[in-house]
Image (cartoon, rainbow, N blue to C red):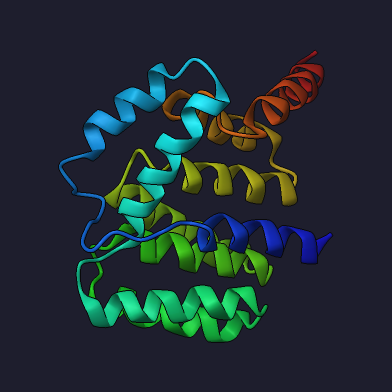
Length: 184
């Protein structure tokens, strides 16, 4: 199962083509988030989601972008400590680059370092509050540690930004049953 989760986490980032320069401050993002929110189907939302990820992925600094790529490649080989080192270096050099923090959060999650992952997610969200990937990751962490209410809140927040986020509705339905069952 851990290997499958690792594959999902890395496949989601390795399959995207990358633009020349972008970040969470890219002027295209507000329009893309509006389109994402108004997409009527998952099929309509996926290309918009992909473009958002493409924009988030690039810092605009060639050396740092090479480190991001190195980290992604390390994740693909399941060399998570190497990936963590690469993403950590990016956060040190450019601490306002949200996606470097998110990638670090993903690796920490894969390593089972949930508290470190949560700290990185908080930093990601402070820089990019619309980061549906970070919110979904927060939901997964809370599920892993048995905090169903917090997981539900995280998935609901992610779904408000990305209404067709794969898996989120299923998690929300199940968590609502669990959380409401505990309230009785």
